[in-house]
Length: 244
Image 1: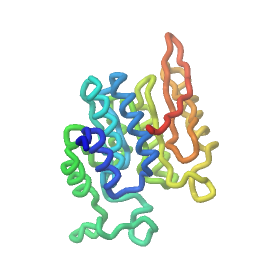
Image 2: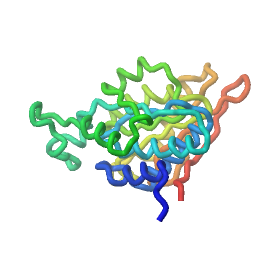
Image 3: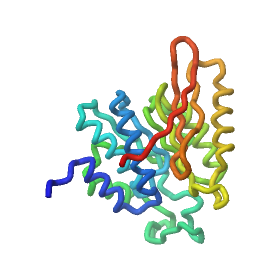
């Protein structure tokens, strides 16, 4: 049996890492990371990392692009690592093994760091530890792909969206991950996603950069691709398909 390539090893590591990202959606993110890197983007941002599962999916896409001759790129992984509201004690998705016994708080950073080291991904991922909106307000690098997968409550989700959507480079991607594919189970209806994107377009009406509208299949991350064409802002819709 042939040894696994680096992208394949990173995918296997992602699947073995504690977290909530389904494999088909992780593969869709890997495909987007590969496309963004091949297109020349050197920066990918994920908001919400937990123990590093989604980080490794993104890193595998970068690694595949590098194997095809792309220039180096990294995932900037933004998280305060104290868990979102659905990860706290008493909540359905709480994991007591991730609690720091000295502080009594969730602390996933040590797990994320060990995950990157064990997977050999430390050259592909950089931890940015802190409050997402605070970091976004001071971030000045346009990203080829931004994945928003932090707190899933309405207030933190909107704060992440407002902070990071403007950081997406032209002709690149914004992906938003929800807790449930079906709004009946607690997910965000498609109309709300489209409303949010339309609001951002309106707020940037006098600028050249505008986001595209969300158009993705059920169960996949919400994706918006921004397009800048000539002297006027224009939008195009894009759907990312999982790698087979």
